[in-house]
Length: 276
Image (cartoon, rainbow, N blue to C red; front, side):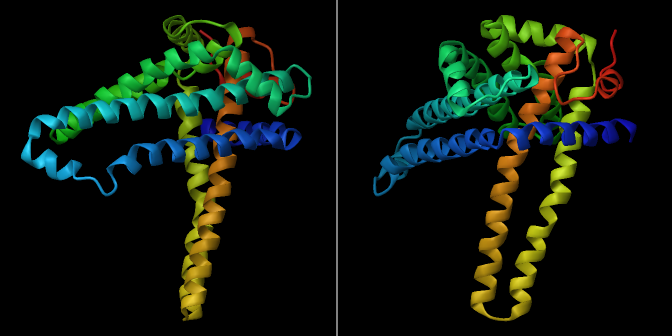
């Protein structure tokens, strides 16, 4: 519970950074828009076609489905990582006492675009393989895959900040992420779980909006409640995405330098990260 309490305090510090640079929320919005456009580009060619009918007639075409899923995984990872890299760059500028802009973040991400894409290929491949294994596994296999996925998430937690700040390739970034985790083992997991729990609680009012619309007893009320709930969850998701990357950057900064970033309490960071 103490670690969750520290995570809550870290989240508030991250929120302070976000309040100073509200434009950072542009990046999750762009990430979401480009991901939806990517999804549409994959789905649109299938609409009105007889692809699935031909798939039933010739199961060998299933290989094309897997190829398409793999490409979607890699490209969607690339979009998310690219805009997360932009947030990392801006957060580092703010933590150094500067005043970042959206242009600063985009420029930093573009300067690392080759390495961002390489990391997207690595992360997307791992994600795709784990997904395929999970779909073909029984319950015990699914548990094993989930544990492997958790281990991968932990090991790669600081890879994007390392890639952006230190200009390393994907495998060097993964190796450095693992090295830093030896200095701060455990807090990354608790941090992610803490953020997820906090935002789960914060998402509950959306349920209230839907039930409030139903309570009004008419179609307009139900539609209005659903629309308001969707807008609320969308805004909450944007804020959550930005805060998590800011938190991740702060953890990386302190794990690397042992110095508290601007806006973060050094004693809090010192107790949040267990040095070995």
